[in-house]
Amino acid sequence: MGIENLAAPEDDGEAAHLIGMRLPSITLSATDGASVDLSQGGLTVIYAYPRTSPASGGAIEGWDAIPGARGCTPQSCAFRDHFAELKALGVERLFGLSTQDTEYQKKAANRLHLPFPLLSDSALLLADALNLPLFTAGGMTLLKRLTLIIEAGQIRHVFYPVFPPDRNASDVIAWLSSRNS
Image 1: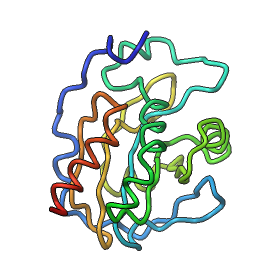
Image 2 (image 1 turned 30 degrees about the vertical axis):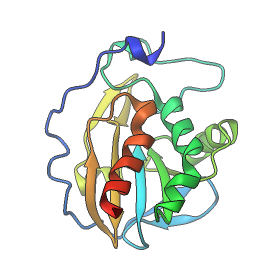
Image 3 (image 1 turned 120 degrees about the vertical axis):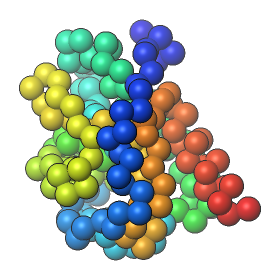
Image 4 (image 1 turned 90 degrees about the vertical axis):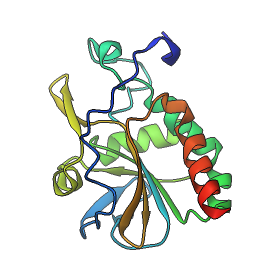
């Protein structure tokens, strides 16, 4: 089943409070071995996604019926494919973010040949501090798909809900381009 056959998620308002928020000083583990404090640094794009399935498959039962759940790999690949464009628009840091642990994420980052690190919020430190939208599936607490544009530690723009996920990178580029013109 392709993502074109999936139901689009509705805007439930769970991310409306994020614009203008300052990021707390919380350190997250990255797949490149770094510890990342998102409250620091210049123009940063973080796309949050529920989870990547293992290379062997193994989606959670009923996954395709959850609006907005499916499409993590196409979203990550789109950010990979548009990485140079994002850098040219001034993005200093690009991260994928999920609640999966760093060891699991390393496998996904390598498999997908991502030129940027993935961050793990497996302890839900950032999710709780920002009150990010969450859902549960397969006994796991997962992030709803959203993308944050952060400057100087403050959230400037939020894409939520994100659908279709494979278009998210292009939407970010369009927003950054319109802002820079």
